[in-house]
Length: 387
Image (tube, rainbow, N blue to C red):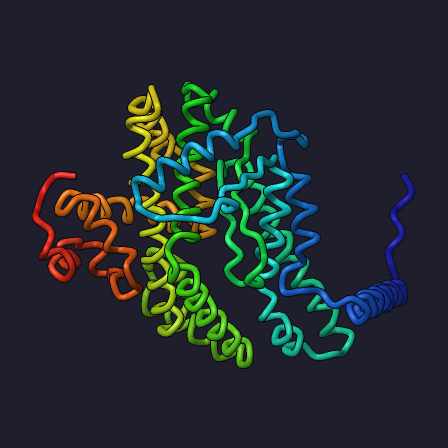
């Protein structure tokens, strides 16, 4: 056997030089592309493309007409809540997972749009800086695409509100039929019952956002304030990073990454949004349960199975929810519903409706956890009674 040839120092040097030259050429190519077409903070086209590739189900056309269910639920929710919405607010769009992805990528991109100029300004315009910016956007796109693909296989319905869009931008009531049909099979429940259950919940969101005059402007104001703090943070990103490191050192056992990522001002606004979203979700569950108990034949079985589904998530789902913060969304359902149920137990539907009179009637974080303190403020004139 002939002995292997050893590389001379000259060969090693030439290899290093060739590698460096190729890297420099690659960086130059990437930088030129970035100059011609700047990448957003998140490369949303890449996110959408990846998410669609990761979906386990192929594109499926809608197979059920939900409009009659939505119209019937609109009558029930309006009568129960005392709220009114324009007739065209109850239009529904039945979608597959791909269409849901497209709608949500568009919404997230619009949400992030105000931060883009500051993001672009933070990077230098050298080849290295531009290549780095493109790489960062692509990595963020991959991460977002993976998260959205996971969500697309689990979401059943959504009222997509144009909070930060133009005032005339249409809101959409979306129902993901493929997921609804699959979950009905997995949980062993009647698919017609599950469809009605989901519709009542989502239609109640329509009545909240379209029937409570102050709700959409108030939530938009909170989002605007939150986005401005993020914009301020982008001006001096190194300060924000150092603050986050300090918070991690001070709170090593924080329950959520939010406690590390947000500064005190952001956390205050975030808490206000969490309280409001908890009420929105909790109130929708309350409406759904009250109406569903009378309208859905197998409501008790359906409710029991769906609650068990929330408790028996696969380990991977639990991990993803913790990493992405989705466990906060689930807490919104739980905490908000417990709060609304406490109000109903004390003062019935009349007291529940007081939640939506003005923004001043919104509970604080402490009151959300302790409804009796809110009732002490706003429930004195309502006689205690069972709902």
